Length: 274
Ligand SMILES: Nc1ncnc2c1ncn2[C@@H]1O[C@H](COP(=O)(O)OP(=O)(O)OP(=O)(O)O)[C@@H](O)[C@H]1O
Image 1 (cartoon, rainbow, N blue to C red):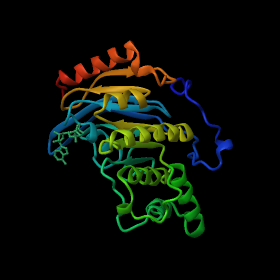
Image 2: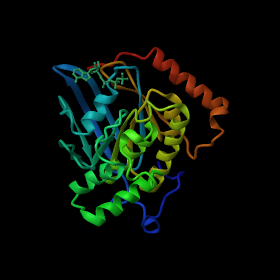
Image 3: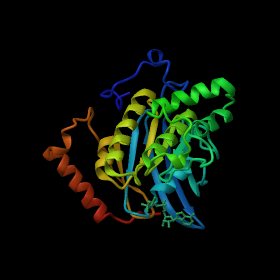
Image 4: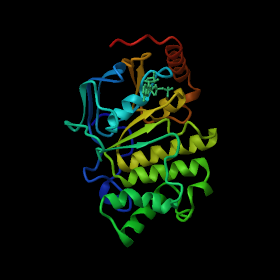
C-alpha cells in the first residue's frame, strides 16, 4: 500500500498491548456520487476513494457540507442518491465499522473516564474484569492511566477529548470520523492532541476522515487533503502530502506556498454543482 509506505508500520504481534482491529488495519472507503442533504436541499455531492489506513482531511468553506459527509459516514444521514461503502459494503445506520469523535465532548457527564470507555466495550460483550482491563489500556494509550476515576467535569478540555478518543478506540472501528475534534482546544493542547493522533494512527493503521478549518492541522495530519467547494460540497482538488513529515517543514518555502494557495482557495472557493 503506497500511502503508508513512509510511515512507521507497527507489527500487530509486537504490540499485544495495543488494540489493533482484527483486520489489522483500516478499511477502504468509497463515496460514489454521494448526494446528501436536508429537506430536499443538497448539501454535498461527493465522489472519492480512500485507501485502507489513509488519513484524509476535508477542508472547505464554512457551511459547505463537511460535517454532513461525516454524518453520512456514521450512518446518521441516509444519502439522497449514490452510495458510501466501507470495504465494498454500504454503510448502514449505527455501523460499528465507523465511529465518530466530535468537537464538543460527547461523554456521559455522570460516568467516570473508565466507565465512559467501558460503555462501548459493554456493547461489544465485554464485562467485569475484562472490561476494566481493556478500558484501562485504552485510557493508558491516550495518556490518562492516572485519571480512570475522574468525572468529565474534573478533567480539562484536552483530557476530555482524550477520553473521547479512548472511547472511540474501544469501539475498534475500521474508520474513525473526526469532526473538528481539536477545534475547541487551546493552541498547545491542540498540538499535543495532533501528536497523540499521529501516534494512535501509527499503532492502529485506522482509516481516518478528519474535518478541520485549520490548514496547518490538515497539512500535518493528512495523507491527502481534500478541498471542497462551497455548498453543495463537491471535491475541488485533492492534495497528496509527502511523508515522512519533517518537523521543520512548515518553515520551508514550499510548505508556505502550498499553505498560501489553500488559504486563497478557501477565500475564493467555487460553488459546487448538484
Ligand atoms: N440538520 C440540518 N437541517 C437542515 N440543514 C442543515 C442541517 N445540518 C446542516 N445543515 C445545513 O447543511 C449545510 C452544510 O452543513 P455542515 O454542518 O455539513 O457544514 P460544515 O462545512 O461542516 O460547516 P462548518 O464549517 O461551519 O462546520 C449548511 O448550510 C447547514 O446549514
